[in-house]
View 1 (spheres, rainbow, N blue to C red):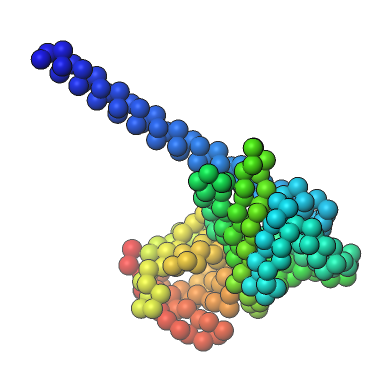
View 2: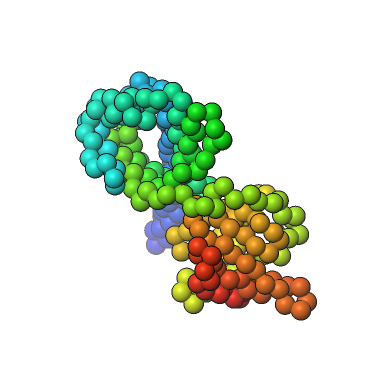
Length: 261
């Protein structure tokens, strides 16, 4: 009986240790996958921004399927590359630059295949040497296939393309650390629900549902986001504490968010 009890105890210790090792291994594998895909994603968009169309091929499978909400379905990497050469990269005086929306990009493992990367991005247009302008926002989902250690995209989805708001060219001022801190907190709006204003390094961000955007300041109490025609005007109480803000869309007040924390 004594030996039996010892065996059970040792078995339990082994199972707990093995489970902990398995979890640690899974976390490490997940981190390695995310790092790998984010690196490949960065390399791909660098090629895109420089319009090196022939270099696209190293990132794409031959049987690629590219889905675009406005252009429909394009099959094979060769067809897509030719379209890029004749369209996006045809005029050397016109360039489109893509930039990911901070905090929106996520990587997920795809069992026995590879990985999925998804997020939001912005597109900036430069024409004939003029100042670069934000012209469009969109969402993306890319499926990366791992074939014997070689990673390529097999499916590309580009959707929810929206024209950039007038806020994209709106000038902004830099808030002090104290001013940023005074705005951070949790707010509640009748339609949107919980809204969080938080600091991220030297920037201020707003999170509400699926929206997670960088805030820009027109003043210490009036902020806006660049990818949509939204403005947030904050109000203080008699002690100078920020207690609520009003959301304006295209200049019209749409709801008030009250500070709850």
